[in-house]
Amino acid sequence: MQISDAMLAGWLQMYFWPFLRIGGLVMAAPLLNAAAVAPRVRLMLALALTAVMAPMLPALPPMALFSTPWWLSIVHEMIIGTALGLILQLVFEAAMMAGELVSYGMGLGFAQLVDPLHGAAAPMLGQFYQICAMLLFLSLGGLLLLIELLFDSFRLAPVGGVALNADSFLALAQFGGLCFSGALRIALPAVMAPLNAMSIGFPLSLIVGLVALRFTLPQLQVTLSDLLAQTWNFAGLWLRGTL
Image (tube, rainbow, N blue to C red; front, side):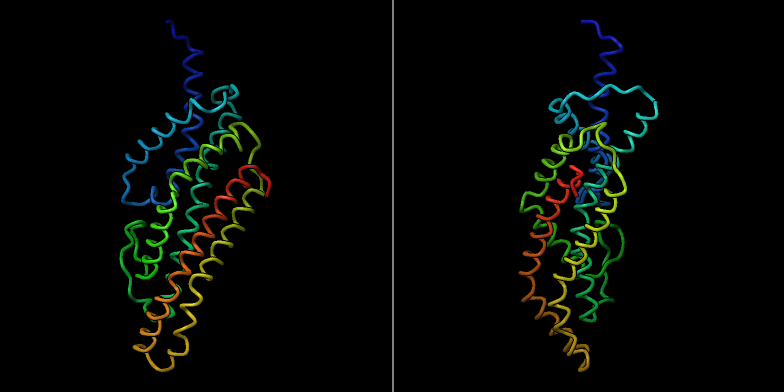
């Protein structure tokens, strides 16, 4: 069998475009973008996902190498992959923000630990809420749903299809506001409880805050599950460009 330049270019194109989108998602998706995950591991994961998905994708339109549409398509694919990861990351940031609000309400804003995911100091309760969000995400099969969304993205927003516009980025910004309103939904019951105790003193405020935290934790699961469901729905609509 003789391998021609055209065949090599076709094979390269078949794997190159999916790899850009998959690589962007792997760099930005929660858990995978943690500082503890080595770049080599993320690269191997992106290559493995590309090797599995690429043969199942529809044939991609030919594109002249190093032309203007070629460079624009590279940027387009990386933005789509990164945006999908950031959409999901916002849910975990909402959990972190909720924990920070509860910490400040209880007077524990000074209690900070090094966050192993981001490599920076963060309030203790913020890390607790974020870990709960991650465990809930894994228990709901979040990684499998993320891979399924990634595969469907090539059908909903094919390579060389409709380009992103200002409305697409505006929708992303508005979705970020929705997630942070979810952080208030998580934190508000626990934050409101210690407010009256602040006039009495820090020990009572801490006790009331811990009791409130105990009884409001079930709300964390309900709100995060709702945010994740809204995230999957938003991602599908965003890829279709129907927002």
